[in-house]
Image (cartoon, rainbow, N blue to C red):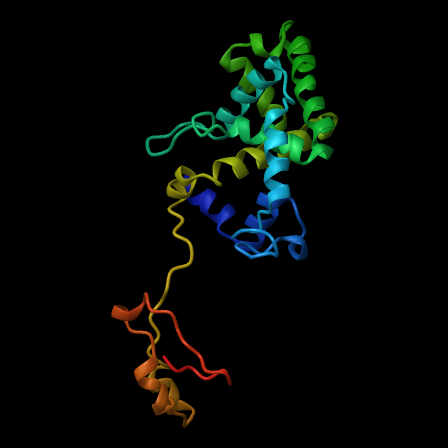
Length: 234
């Protein structure tokens, strides 16, 4: 199974993707495109827009931390023949915003980035941003595979899991990310009633009044209409 197929399995499950992209339990995941009072499509209010602008004006990561972040997100989501790298899609900027939007993640994120320097000093006698690519990979390998990681790296594994989730969330919330997964969203299907052989098996028949109303390929862009009693009329 190649990388693209693995990612499809991970991100096309509705519950799994919802949890990853929002950090919420299933019952907390917001209804998309819901129109709320005083807001716009998607539920964005003027207050929320002002808050977004405020968060964007603030800075969380230091230059050293942001350099580490750039290195790590491109290890998690590198450029491929048919896909850009995470830094090309400005995933670090997304993570920067999320640190301010969800401040509860700030301490573990900053702690994990500090741990990189500690581990780099222990193994190579220099800070993380001074390491070669091979040395960086050696440190990443310590925490990238939870089932293989040593017990003393449990905290760092949890941090890297958070970073990986944020990286993928940012990457796959872009148009390029959708194209890479070949995600097409909900698409209309064609319904011409229950197959006749199935109906015959149970002694049933499609209601004749609905036969001309079933969705046909040439009419798949037409919106269904219902009367006040819930009957399909067109």
